Image: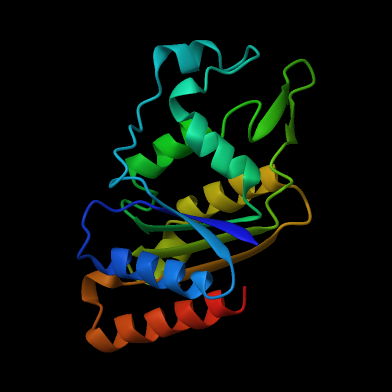
Length: 195
């Protein structure tokens, strides 16, 4: 399989970057990997005026993100590695979805009928490896995990009904320990090795 790993964290000596490296290295033993580090690649999350103007008119002006669109269209799987900040994905990753998972690439609009048809049916694996500063009960019970809802109710469906998925999260990072981080890293390595 060709699997793209999309990473979004500004600090290379962060725990999240260590997760990204673990995912890429573990996948690389059995699969071809496209390692996409949005910060290191200088990705601009801000949608351009041309992109927005063409959003509901074909063709979408994807010239500035054409390489990322090409990678997405050719991948058999995609894994996102990022932290949740304020119960949501970082702005860098949100910008990636805004600009790259656009009409003509991720979905086709039926504006009159109000429906969206998924176009990323080449993606057979949709994975997430993430962290939260808050404990699980605050994230899932009190806040109702809005970031996870966006990923699994809005984005994953663009891959079609047969896509396999997984979601791995390290909660309570603000009070994490060396032992909790090591255990989660081992859990990530084991799950990725099964891909």
